[in-house]
Every structure is written in C-alpha cells, then in structure tokens.
Image 1 (cartoon, helix red, strand yellow):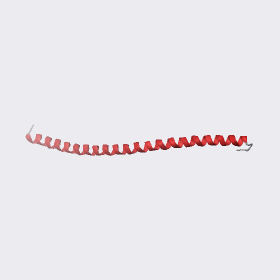
Image 2 (cartoon, rainbow, N blue to C red; image 1 turned 90 degrees about the horizontal axis):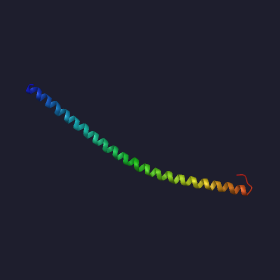
Image 3 (spheres, helix red, strand yellow; image 1 turned 135 degrees about the horizontal axis):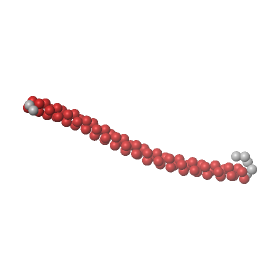
Image 4 (tube, rainbow, N blue to C red; image 1 turned 135 degrees about the vertical axis):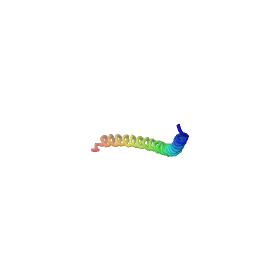
Length: 80
C-alpha cells in the first residue's frame, strides 16, 4: 500500500470520527431533552392522579346523596 493511500484512509477515518462525534453530541442533547420532558410528563401524571382521586370521591359522595334524596322522596310520598 502506498503512503498516499494510507494518508487518504487516515483522513477519511478522521473525518468520519469527527462526524460521528457531532452525531453523538446531537444524540446526547436529544436524550437530555427527552429526560426533561419525561420528568414533566411524570409530574403532570402525578397531578392528574390526584385530580382523578378527588373526582372519584366527589362522584361517590354525589351518588350517596342522590340515593338518600331519592329514598327521602319515596318516604315523603313524592315522585323523584
């Protein structure tokens, strides 16, 4: 193999490595951004779970109140 061929291969490898370094930097940035988004989504989901629990409890209380109101109307001889 001629020295110029070796030099060409080395230059090509160096350029490939430099390009791969840029790609790796872009990937690291994307991963960091995704992690930040995942943290925001997790926080939102936790808040949503709390909202869902409170809504479920409120609906259960309303159901209980409706049953009591209907029973009371039946005892008072009124149509509900």
